[in-house]
Image (cartoon, rainbow, N blue to C red; front, side):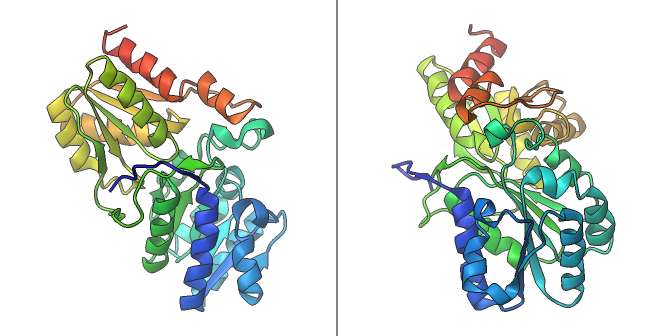
Length: 318
């Protein structure tokens, strides 16, 4: 399932390439963007199928309503822009025009999390998963690498109803083997077996957590790593409970606020089924700031080394 050589590839490229592939098979697929097609990589679809691509300009709310209208006519709209603009700016339209009537609109947002970098707080979506998982009828998915993105986009094109897929700006380690990995929306992915602590993560922090787990292993701490790409519905709940029963310790890691995202989903699950203390690692209750991607990951404690230090201290090993 895992690749031996972790090459660096762009999840945004995976999205654009998969749209082109799907567009060749299904003429009902249309793509809308808000003047950021080179950044979101929907420009690939625009080049291949210009008659099915719509640039809405910097009018994101109109774009969501247009997508809703297209969905009522049997089209499958994929709507893209930066995660901040796709969610916070369009919350009313997503809630009332897409999710309330349960329309078949796929919102695939790029530039999620703190790693938007130098664009700073106004562009860094740290609350988007919290927004989206709180709306009825919405499915929320946060894939971890190039190969998983391809499978997720194909999956969401086939299911009915609103979906929010969050992609990173960052080029990421390709963790999953394209010939062996199969995306399963109903389970967590046990990426690493362990007995001392369960670390639950998704998206771009999976690679950092794997680095952290190796550092912990060097200290004799056996970390079990669960990748939970589907945040809503939280279909990984059973796998999380089973793992935490074994290890007795739960840690969540996400490139998102500790409020309302993966950490909250895990806490809700465990409080109702297996009351357990949970260490939530993510951005605190604050806005982001401008800086280089790796510097920001380090500042907010999301690099493998910083995760190792934090979790070791939590376990009483430092």
